Length: 286
Image (cartoon, rainbow, N blue to C red; front, side):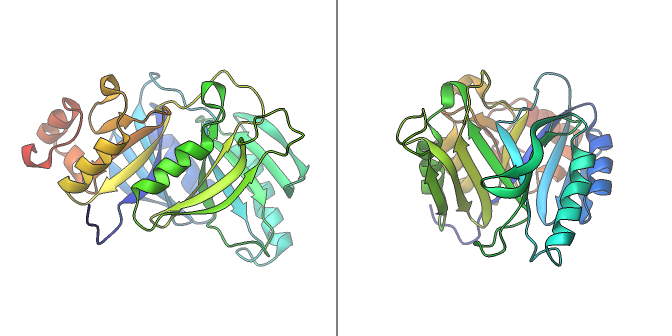
């Protein structure tokens, strides 16, 4: 498929009737955050330090979990020094941990200050003080944890995703040490760039009885029907999961393969009803 401009990737959080409240919360607690697009009663999209997060005003059908989280990189170079980076990290820890703490705030082998928390809307965040001597990464990096029945699939899945996008590339790749109880090719951490969007992945370091759900999905905003057709064909692996522009790949990750003007289309009642009745979106029929 010929591409001149990349499709845009972002993350969407399924909210149980609380999308508006969540949007106001995130816009308040992050220092650089604003609401950039809304479909009243349906979706709200924010920019958080340049990263797009969409909030879907749904019901209790889907529940987010830590299989897809967002890493927040507190790089001293981005915040005027280590003291300022630590202060912002601690500030967000207090705001974002009201739904629970998955890993306590403290010093770890991979970071001098780190915590994994859940906010009251179910989104999970990994707050990490970053080594400024390392390769630069954006402040927000979505991260996929391959646990439960998916454990051991991180490298295969990310290889597949990288192969789908022009100019995609892998950054770092670290395996668990030989002394660990995991198989030799289990991934401790990797990051990769899909058309300018940095993402990360790992095989879980502990057993979990959960895996990916539509509670947190990946939004792939396409410019043309050709792009929609291509990515749908490459990503959709479970036909019965196809609905209103959503599909699920063979690892259970939910993808929204939608046109870039999806908010505009969903704002029109007649068009919205058509979208809700289909699997793959056909622009000609809208």
